[in-house]
Length: 500
Image 1 (cartoon, helix red, strand yellow):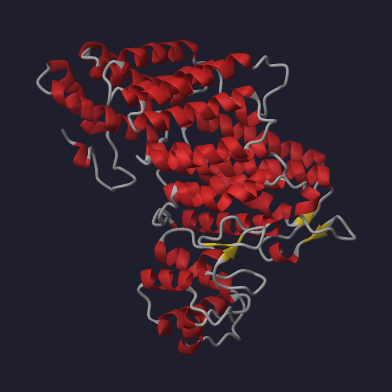
Image 2: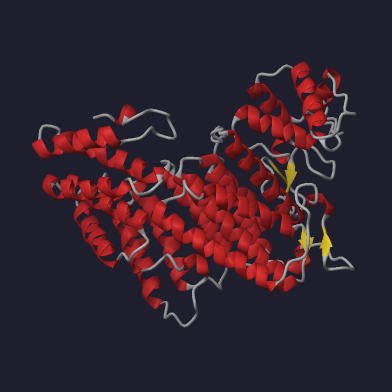
């Protein structure tokens, strides 16, 4: 007991609409259903959890997490409730012992537990058909401030994990969700291959169809990490966890589950750091930055990009640094900072061509090639064209080059290029050319499960308003309205409040 109110639990309790008596009865009922009929939670006990920071004994924290997850329709973990396994309630602490307002970063030996709990709750939402998008996004400033010191330290894996007499040792903290057992290099190789398969599927078809499979695989890996393997295997396993967490986050972002996506990106950064891979941690944070730009929060994106770039370490390859620069440039373009954007894109081009390829890129960078470089440049210039129409012609050139370079299996990226091209053409007063590329995008979008492509199409649709009386464009607008699904963020069907 801390003697201080558990503000996290109090906030979630307020959202639930339950009375304290109702919550007590639900806890007893749920506990009995999982074989713990001896629990006798009452109203006064719930009041002590909230008002005095009392931490209930197992299995109550897990029961509460399950109940709040189902009630609120989003993932709620034990830490979200203000509880941790070692009995400490309330605020989280970083690795140096400093308190943080949101529990980020958590202690090193908590990563596998947080990963397993969060994926388990996410899978439960999938099984029960709940949406899982009701939480609020943390700001880029809050994340970067909390994680700065943590990411800039570079401890060896052996220093992060507790040393035990028997290296093949299961952490009992994780054993309630997974029967931990040792694995060898062959099993890890199979897991690494599965990541490649999931990544290729995501690039081709979008995140909707395979997200649950990726989350399930990540949940299994979290359980494996509860077992203490020899260092060389443990590092590789953390690498698998980081790659799967990035994919789970990217797929969640792709289907509009934004707070869930952000949590996975943070988990991925933690997992990468546990495995000693600072460039991977930086790339994971850059995904969170891309998410922020997509959601119209470029200032938050820039905060995250500063952390991603500075925390990636000197071992980051030039091509990876080029990719990070393109995301920063997109954020700058969203804010109308044309001069800064052009300078940043110039640095990205220089870094890209300076990469001689003598060091093989990590698997997670193999998707960023010359086509992606041009695609990101097209997106940045198209975004800047909202502030400076002269940028539209440059955007068209990059989009055209990206489309020429695209190879098979990258359908979603090609759709984004079509939309960038069409949007730039509308801004450049070339509706006939815009119509052509918009229709190519529209035809292709039925083959993916990416909500982000529809979000971008909504942005393009807004630009068609000035050509509403133009025959072919009026027909295009009608076809888009018929095809447009509900917005995952607003629930509006069709084009909702973007109708022009």
